[in-house]
Length: 217
Ligand code: DX5
Ligand code: ZN
Image (tube, rainbow, N blue to C red; front, side):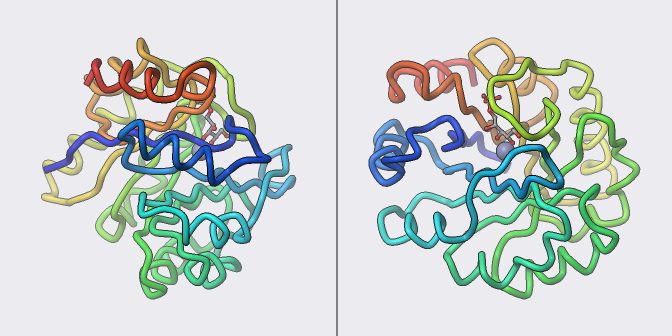
């Protein structure tokens, strides 16, 4: 029931041609477009806001998977919903009100997803697992593309699979950071089914790279 999905991250795309880059992602057969929103506070980098989501929405029917690396993400739920985001992922480390923030995302009509950094244990999100559509396990520290995959994070993916089974819950498991045609196998074996990839996909031919990932699934 948890089908595999590939989610190219436009953080590694040409910022001057987002619509063309998203068209390439679609042609390559990916399912999601991963959109990394950073505020320069939660992480030491700045990217873009809901304006980019609103600009892309009329040009694609792909699932817009928005990863919020911002403090107090609950403040931005409505504007991203209006912009046309399909999934909103928020970090448990970024808010004092994770339960309420996830409720807000669902009430706004989006799929709700909770994210844990490499240093955050699964126990930090256990109380909200029954209300999320997806859990994003960071496989690098957030902020920048092109970092090395942290293999120890796979223990948490396996732990989530177990909890999901035991409690009869339904949520997808996404991994993000350092995913290429080798690390994707580790993530798949651990039980993830949504694979974000930035630099690997956008360095070279997008269609060929997405196919390379798909071949490993
Ligand atoms: C990192 C972002 C990732 C990033 C992944 O903070 O959340 O989505 O784009 O890039 P790669 O695949 O290059 O590690
Ligand atoms: Zn991301």
